[in-house]
Structures are given as C-alpha cells and as structure tokens.
Length: 254
Image 1 (cartoon, rainbow, N blue to C red):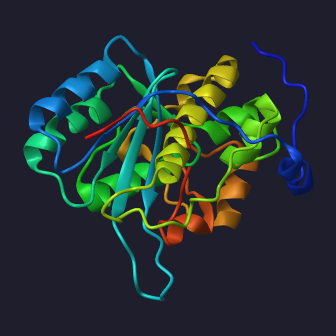
Image 2 (cartoon, rainbow, N blue to C red; image 1 turned 90 degrees about the vertical axis):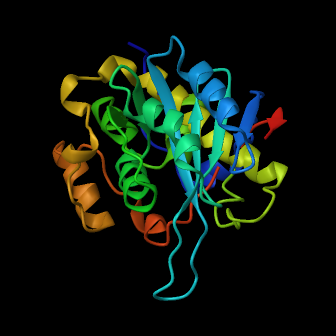
C-alpha cells in the first residue's frame, strides 16, 4: 500500500505546480471511422487489461434551459488512450464494440465522479457502464481530503492538470490538439490515481449503473462522502451543464 505524504492542497499551491504532460499515444474514433476500425481499436484497448481510466466531455451550455448530450468518451490504459466522438451520432454497428467494452464485468472503469459519466452515457447515448469505481471513495479511504481530479493528482504526483479546455466546444467539426490532449490526460490521470490508491479498494466500492445513488447536489455529495456511504456520484455543478474537460499527445486520428 503506497504511503500518502499529504492529504490536501490549496488552490494557490496547485497553481504553482508544474503542468503535467503525458506522452501517451491516442486514437480518435468518429462517425467517419469504419466499423472494422472500431472493432480493432476497442478490442486492442481491452485486451488483457483489468482496469480502464474513463471520462466524458460535453459541450457546455451557457443558457438556461439549454443542454447538450455527451460528446466525447475517453478510455485509457497506462500507455494509450482511445477517444470516441459520440457527436455526430454513431451507427449501432460502430457502437457495438464500445458497448461490449463498457459492459465488460471483467474490466473495472475508474474516474472521479464516474457515476455522472455513467448516467450521462446511458441517458444520452444508451451506453451502459458496468463495474465502476469512483476515485473519491479511494481518496477518502486513504485519508485524502480533496475531491477533484486535479487536486487528487496534485496531492499524489505533485503535478498540475490544466483545465483550460474544460469549457471548450466538444462538438466542433475537428477537435484541436489542445482539446484532445486535455481529454486524454483526464482518463490517463484517473487510472494513475487508481493505481496509487488501489490498496484501499474494497468490494463495496464497485458499482454498476443500476446501483448508483441519486445525489441531488454538491452539498449532499460531500456529506455522503464524509459519512463513507457514497458509491458512484455526481461531478458537482460542472456536470449540470455537462461541460467538462482534460490532455496528451495525438498519435492518430480517424
């Protein structure tokens, strides 16, 4: 079990840290990608792995009553990332290998507030996420007092994850390299956090879509976390507009 040397970090301390850059190859799949390539990439990512870092991105909505569907799904192993563009809409044939990967009970999917990702993927895209672990449960068990991905990563690795692309347009025709790097980094960082805190994992932390609690707001989420009773939860008010974000090197675009 890895020793935790600090439990929290201030915003000021976070800003002073060196920005993290992950040199991992990534592949982007979209509506223009062949079904054969979807099958090949999803199979390659899930082959022989037991854990995947996961995150999603959604175009932010700045007007009341306006919302957007999940735009991007990010999946990562320790050495590669797969970014799947869900808008424009993919065909059922393209989605089939994605569904198989997400539903695989032999592969644990991890992320901060992964419950929100699961709910959004199901509501917007009918993609079911099974066997997930919210990293905030692990951080609480390890005695860490921060909840966000950026602060968790900073506490554990002493690096800052830039959030500059979080509110960018995730439905634009071509995503920028900065957007792709940002998105890939969050998924890879989530996996690294899991690997650092895996010693605190227990069976009660695993959840499937049906087992997610219905938390209504940030305050209730924090309260539940403090009481140690939460499983897969909400990503704060950022998720209300469904606009989030994340970074790594572009190797291949489809």
